[in-house]
Image (cartoon, rainbow, N blue to C red; front, side, top):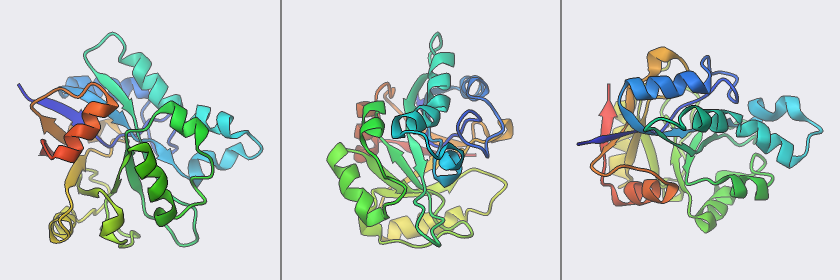
Length: 224
C-alpha cells in the first residue's frame, strides 16, 4: 500500500497567515489518508517581530507551538508528525522561502541568528546538521532565482490555489539543473488539504526515514 506524506503545511499557532489550528490540520491529513505530516511553519520576521526582547529560547518555544500542538493532536492516531520550517532570511529585498527538513528541537535551540544569514551562509550549517533545503514555490511572484548548486532541490508542485506558483516552470527548472523536485499542499486553510505531498512504498516514521527517502528519490509526487 502507498503511504502519503505532507511536506508543506502551516498552523495558526505559529504562522500568522494560517487560518486553521494544528488539531484541524491533523484531522484533515487523516481524512485524506496521510500517514506523515511535516509541519513547516514560517521561520521568518513575521513570526518573531512581536517577540523583541525575548530570549532565543523563548522565540523557539513560540515557533514550535504549532508542531507541538500537531504532535499532541496526532498522538493517538496513525499520523506521524515531524518538525520542519519554511525559512525566509531578513536581508533587504529578499522574499524567497526555503523548506528545510530533518530539523530537531535541539538544533533549533542551539542555532541562533538564522534570519540574519544569507542562503550561502546558511547552507554550511544545514550541511553540518544533515538537513535538506528546497526552494519553495521558486517561480511565484516575488521570488528570485538562486544558484541551484546551493540547494538540494525545488518545490516543483505547490498546490495553493491562491497563488500563481507556475509549477510547470519550476518542474522544467529543476530538470534543467538536475535537481529533484518535491510537492506540498501549502496548507493554510481546510480547502488546501490533500492536494500535495509525496507518495512512498515505505512508511516515513522518523527524520532519518524522511531524509533517506528524499535523498534516494524513492517517492512519487502528489499533484491534485
